[in-house]
Length: 351
Ligand SMILES: NC(=O)c1ccc[n+]([C@@H]2O[C@H](COP(=O)([O-])OP(=O)(O)OC[C@H]3O[C@@H](n4cnc5c(N)ncnc54)[C@H](O)[C@@H]3O)[C@@H](O)[C@H]2O)c1
Ligand SMILES: CC(C)[C@H](C(=O)O)[C@@H](O)C(=O)O
Ligand SMILES: [Mg+2]
Image (tube, rainbow, N blue to C red):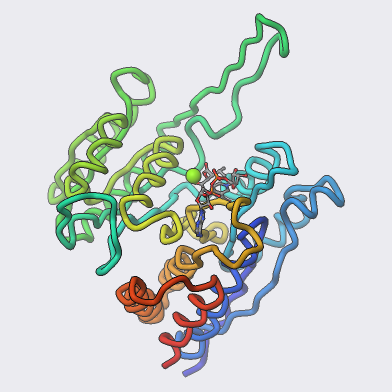
């Protein structure tokens, strides 16, 4: 069978980013020959080291190169030696915004044999997808500061929500819900306080929902959602929420599903006007960087999402199965290094 050629951009980034990406690529190399895809990889030197050297975060020329790729795999960005926000906004958010990643897809699933801090959880109780809006909300950078450094300083950070932006992400979430057995979509917001944005989300949910009579909908305030994630995770099937709420609840989602080292994500451009970008939910973890302690599983599961996105569903399922088998045996294996976990999963995929 002739393989379809895929241009894959790899952005290892900072801290544990390069360590976990190495393992993700080992697994990709193991599955690629039987995936129907042939990957041509280009690695991009972006992150703290480049910023120190050149002052650049994501130069226009690199952004244009990224646009020409079919998909992107990213490790993590951010480093204590760089002012907070410089790389997060200048590199990661710039890529998400410029490449119109309006869906930030974050599955929250407890794999068999993985321990969760929650008591009395049955298999299947933690199995949801968070559809986080990716290009709007409080993330756009609208706002500013007056009288900085004085006792009268005023800092504003506005949440931008457009009918266009809300409708497209809500519609995507309905499509996800319609394709799942439970067919349930929960809007998570804070419409009792953020009345303008919350009301827009509510009206769009109702209007678009009329086209999906088979999907049941409900609404949970974000503060209550943080509680229900921990006390009744089985309430949730597909969740749609804004950019900031989605950021916060998916770290909780990671914690209930076995830890941040297992949480995968895709920054998806569903219209295909630019490449989608896959990355673990976690950050650069400076506290453990360079020690071989990082769990590469989140990145490996992000590789599975990347394969799925590229139409290689069978290969994606094989990677997920290999991860699931590895996780099922993990508790008996003692501590393993980043590379040992990656190699064990790659071996399962190959053989
Ligand atoms: N997508 C991204 O690139 C991304 C996401 C989150 C945070 N960040 C950035 O990363 C830096 C650190 O942020 P933070 O400390 O809030 O979040 P973090 O996710 O990097 O780390 C939080 C905690 O989780 C642990 N952890 C994270 N990933 C792990 C893994 N794979 N295996 C084992 N343990 C893991 C860390 O050791 C740390 O104790 C900051 O600069 C932040 O802005 C980047
Ligand atoms: C680093 C930061 C910009 C990012 C976000 O807030 O989206 C991160 O926390 C994430 O969850 O991917
Ligand atoms: Mg986050």
